[in-house]
Amino acid sequence: MSAIPLPAPPHPIAERRPIRALPDELVSQIAAGEVVERPASVVRELVDNALDAGARQITVRLLSGGVRSIVVEDDGAGIAPDELPLALLRHATSKITSLDDLEGVSTMGFRGEALAAIASVSEMSVHSRIPGAAHGLRLDARTGELSPVARGVGTSVEVRELFFSTPARRKFLKTDATELAHCVEAVRRHALARADVGFSIWHEGKLIEQWRAASHYADRVSAVFGDAFVTASVPIDTAGIAHALGATGGVSIRGLAGVPDAARARADQQYVYVNGRFVRDRLIAHGVRAAYEDVLHGQRQPVYVLFIGIDPRRVDVNVHPTKIEVRFRDGREVHQAVRRAIDDALAAPRALAAGAQGQGEPSGTSWDQGGALETSARAPVTWPADGRVGPAPLWPTPLGRQQALSLNELAVLHAREPSAPWAGIAQVPTAQPDAAAWPLGRALAQLGGVYILAENALGLVIVDTHAAHERIVYERLKASLGGDTIASQPLLIPTTFAATPTEMATAQSEHATLSALGLDVAPIGPATLAVRAQPAALADADPAELVRSVLAELQQPGRATRVVQRARDDILATMACHGAVRANRRLTIEEMNALLRDMERTERSDQCNHGRPTWRQVSLKEL
Image (cartoon, rainbow, N blue to C red):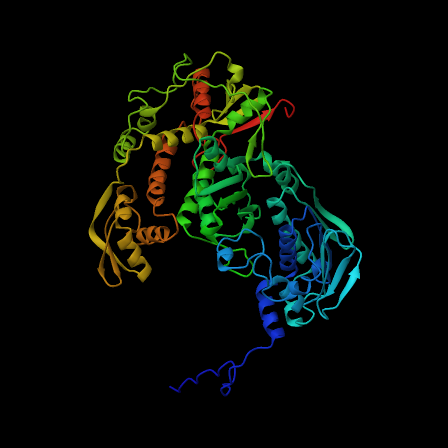
């Protein structure tokens, strides 16, 4: 066999070159490559500076999607004449003066390199005027020449022919329409965070977007995404609740979380802000997804706008030149705060809000300019109270509501009689004197053995009987579950598999968690794990693949405390599905009313365990 020749190196090996300092122009262009990726990067940086200057109206004018020209005008404080030349120097800024300032940054910009980076790859000029000045000044970034100019108080930055000095970079830009879309998105991100500031975007001399200053954040969200986004969302305000209770916390969450029905195929309406700065963070995204995992299944993407408040000294924003990434001192705390805030907001049945609106009471939420959540004055929603006489229960309650069953006991009961688990802990439904006050109304009839038709103050309510009862049973099983571990089944012959160093470390550090899941996993070599037991409910699963998937979950931030609960919930969800009312079972009016009352007081009753909606409202106008 002939020898296979080695491939030639991609570049000829050059002789050693001496180390030398790069010229300033080349250094600036290297820095610009990190800061300025496309026209939208320029728009983002210039709008950041305008907001830091106290602007209340910002106008963005674009030509050819921002490639030919970008002009950002503001009515902020302006730049003093003697400081104007300094504004274009690298690492010159008014935002920070010491390391202490850097560790507690509260402004949008702080690196002092945006204007210098933009000027190195474009033809740029700055027009600015401060209060009290007779006129403004124009600074040409290429020549450094200062000249008088007429303009109001504030600053205008004009950027022409982006990447003209680096033609290779310009070839990587997309079409004008694509670049324009990115520029609009950059302004939209700022507009959502600053409802008190007006924004307008012009392209080729035509106004394409305008968001006027609003007094409430809900109005700005509605203006950006439409009324449907706000209508299909639930408010979040952990700071407002903590303040009302006289408590203080390290992390506050405000915003809107879309209901599961509003989920989309793409993750294009997910906005997260940390201290007013738009960020993309995998830890926060995972916390959001964990909150939705019990009501949203499959690949559907939730919609949300979240404002996270945290001490600036507990978050590092100096992670990436684009300032879109952050690093938290205590990521676990932030993850849990986000998950709990959204989980609590989604738990309340939406039927209560619908019932309140049907009674003619004002509803809705908004944020004031300080970020505090305001809730419209509303009379308390009345619904069945404990102790009142009502229809006969849909199912008997021999065990009583307070008695908890272990997961193993529930499994035995379910195997013996599928109806036993939920029948044993069903809550006695109750009534109230005025049926019109019931959010889901009173039952009229059963349709096709599948749907319940009910009448409330708004019109007609259509309920998926199986889906609704499945959620009720599931939530009660979770509430009644004891704190025991999942039953395990020893393997006759232990299963071994080769593990990575990360898997080995996780298996040892999370041994208690694995045991609670019914898994007996132990190392038998430097790179080998043995599985000696697995959950009894998953007797047919591949032990090695099961352990690998669990170890991968445990490696994610915040998952160690959730993976046991998630595994239990999956088993309970299966039991609830098999125990819920099946199609074509005829129910009496009393039984249907009992189910409606249970839905009104059961958390997450708007979706079944698989994410399907359990009921729909049809107004009289629609009928």
